[in-house]
Image (cartoon, rainbow, N blue to C red; front, side, top):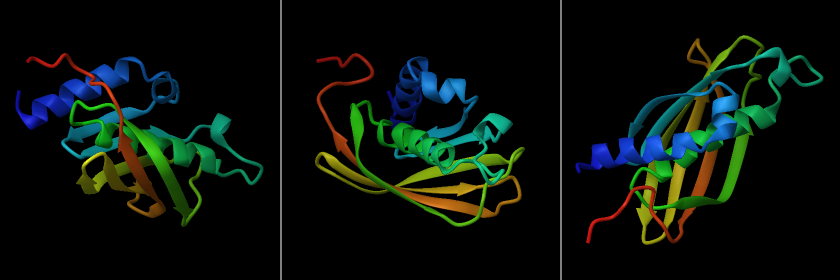
Length: 143
């Protein structure tokens, strides 16, 4: 399999068990080795006391993009540390897009930056995730 085929097959395997992303109606828009783009529409159920998108939902979208990007090599990889900076509010009805890209991947550790934008291209938040590869694969490995 090519690296792109591995990324696509790993994403399909992960998506099948990803109830959180599915139930929030996220879409996996792009997958490639070390990259992933996911999007979702902000609903009333995602609003906070200010009438904006609750930050936890923005974090969840970014975390899902991070997960698909760092798991694109057919190695089970988990989050070790994440941080988010909110720049402008997400609004009800906004279509938010999280674009994850690999910054560094060495041995069992990785760093990924995820930019969250709205449908107007406005920069809503920035997320950085540190990953750790653990035992296991998403797809069977031939010996």
